Length: 533
Image 1 (cartoon, one colour):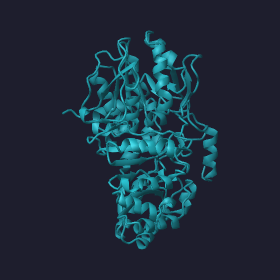
Image 2 (cartoon, helix red, strand yellow):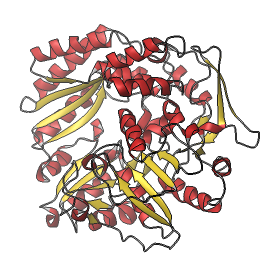
Image 3 (cartoon, one colour):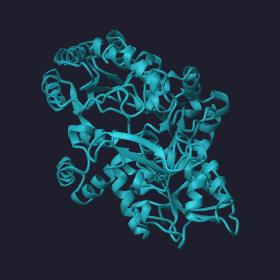
Image 4 (cartoon, one colour):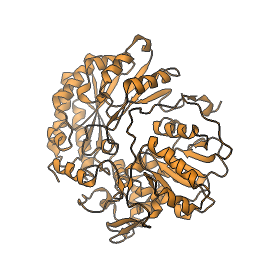
């Protein structure tokens, strides 16, 4: 039995027109990872539901029957280092990896997903078309527009698509530099009839997404995912998940959430509630009451994220009854100074109260997410985090306490995009590990080296395509990137420029021509509100 035949579909694919567009839709990782991506599921289902598109799926380990001459090849891009697999899959299909090397016999290569919407520039040389924003808005617009010029030349297709809102054609923009390895001087369209800015497209409805397929072969076995909220109202100054996806939207309980849940529970008893701030849904209590009915006693429920001041004993008890043993809360720091700088509206008393309620409700563990290297952080702030963890352990002694900790990485389109990665962050992670271990807190730091690579790609421009090709051959280690930088010295700026330097407000950013919810002027105001510019 094939993996594909084990899928339980929650939609009905349409029969295809005779002249339907042959399209390959790829996820640059293994099937078990790709099929767990809600975004990938939704886009694939959209294509399957169109009679004018004949879609085949492609993963790094398996694929469906692929068309001999596809017209479109798309990638859903969720994790930066999967770019290696994008290049590998293009070669597997016999397609040049550089857009400039493709001719009339090659398909258009398009991509979408959170990596592209944040900053597509490091990968711009590899793609003909990049879709910026929400699929609910963009997919039909893209396919309908393509149908209108389907018989035209490659150049005519790209030129036409470049005028459609949310569609970015990198090769129709020219990037000029002050010097070859210097700052960006300007980013301009090659032709006057191409818009100077491409604006991310935003879906504003309150019918949010849910799984279109359930399978035991997914990384989260047999899970049915329901999007409860999109974006986050807190707007922590470093947070891409909040700023990039504004405005904060909530799914209607009666019109969206309950009908979606009812559909999913017909094929599985495992339910995942997704969103950057699930418990801040205004009807969240009603959702819990609904799922708390005895008819759902055999349903396992997991929640992606929990806001600290929403952790009640009632919520903890509900999760325990639905086979969840722990909750995860992002606190960033135990220092009130740092939380004020980053706009984290949270007090230590609320964090301690959340742990007390989790224990009282019968949960076994609580995992906090923290961060080191935030602007203006010092070792006194790290000590404040250690003291807070002590207080949590004292208040809830039966809970297993874990602190997962990452290094601050600047993200595009946020007020902290101008700050670099703190070079002392690795020592700060080690400091926390040493001291938290003494008090019995399970400390789980993320790789500092991965943070360096993440920062590089996060703030990269299209000159990085040369570097990404080299590191693909050397391996995805920090040493491989440093080796590639050494080879390209004089051709691109040094690693320090992209990763560690604080950039000046007003300098041309790699994503300057790509617009999201907030203007740069607004981001500067948010930065100034922290008092640390």
